[in-house]
Length: 201
Image (tube, rainbow, N blue to C red):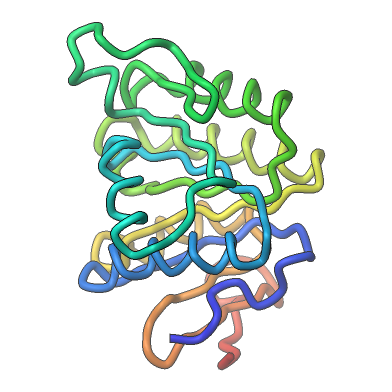
């Protein structure tokens, strides 16, 4: 698979569509690519704990030195054993706590110069929240990223994503990247999904 982030200094908001069978590999490659570019990453995980994700990355020899986490899973399964935050991680009660998630993200931004924001994933958030709530969250977050000249990557799982849903979220992003073979990039040329033209990388 080619480079996921073709223009790392454009400060764009991106929807990254990942096929289910390539999910774990693509997330690992994405972080590896960003770390290789010497970028500082804020990774918001609503799928797995920070410890589980960090273990997977280390097994693939991917450095997590410049990766900061917003963990939306550990606190809900730890029975009160997890603290609110530490040097590298902000803990959120659970994936339904969108306001707390926003506060944790931007608290981290105030403390650390973040280059890339990665949210994994929109589909998981939609299990716990309404589409309207997630749209509002993505709109607010993408606006803040633009304001702070940071780049945002919002992950969608391909098999769980339909055109109508993408059309709703696309209004808050600059482009859609499909992480598949061959890798494709869809760039805005008009309104809605019909306004995305396919460009092969």
